[in-house]
Length: 121
Image 1 (spheres, rainbow, N blue to C red):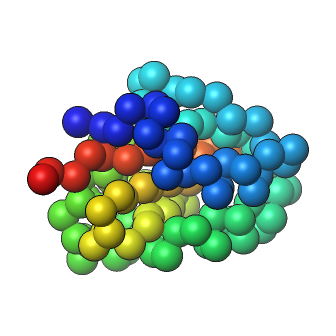
Image 2 (image 1 turned 90 degrees about the vertical axis):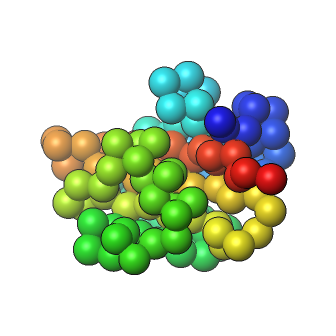
């Protein structure tokens, strides 16, 4: 179960607004996530925006040690491959948000999807 689009928009407001004018966001119904695609030339700028709001970064070398909610988010996105990252907020908070950073094979484009698996009450 995921947060509704409107709820995800509320909890992701800081990242979405910080990147307005830099990247265009659209809704990706496949992953129930906000999606931005951007030039790899802008990777440092966008990563700096993400790191302000996402306290953890996971990759294929450390995802095995991640808390269960992080692993759920990772599995929802199909797992991490080499070069891919999963940015997450603090898993102990009431609302958990993750961002899947996927460089394309052409090396010129990166996709970012921001989603939130609903936490069990």
